[in-house]
Length: 229
Image 1 (cartoon, one colour):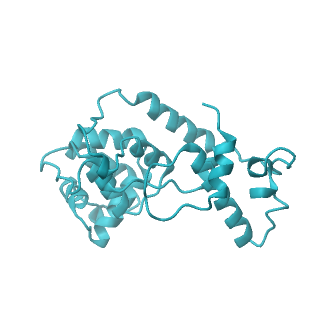
Image 2 (cartoon, rainbow, N blue to C red; image 1 turned 180 degrees about the vertical axis):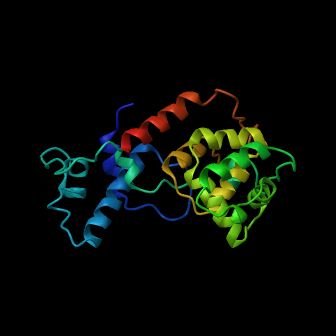
């Protein structure tokens, strides 16, 4: 779908978004937010937004008659320059996410630890049971927060989808762990925000992530990541 430039400009004129999460932003709002972020980084770096044609000084926000970018945005989407705000756990149908069953998903938890904590001495790596407890903890301890961050920040979308499927973890619990570990990933936030519903709107049946259901989405995210690398 083509980007609505007038909506981008209107969102930019409204100013940077507040810290409070009130709804999942549109793509146009995220592009506007990314432009605010680029302007902020430019000024903090001692550079001139006008010289770099950012904000009102460029065609994206300033409109026809303004110059285009002086430099490429590489292969990443413009909106990927601003952090994607992840909806809070309560937006996923579980104000207090239920714990995982004690014997669920030990295989994939062991695989994620082995794959993404290879640099941690073996005696310092968590067991699958300890990882399960880390996901259940709210708040987690400092070491549990480290374990969660290593797995959630480094795991591919395909691996994380498998984690949710094999453990039977509610999406609210998964999102809670992302927040607790302070993991801010565009691909994961975009993925999870598809299922976010404001609590005041009520919740229907929690959507299940079935085998193959999100293969095209997973492939798209992985392809974009490879292209950006």
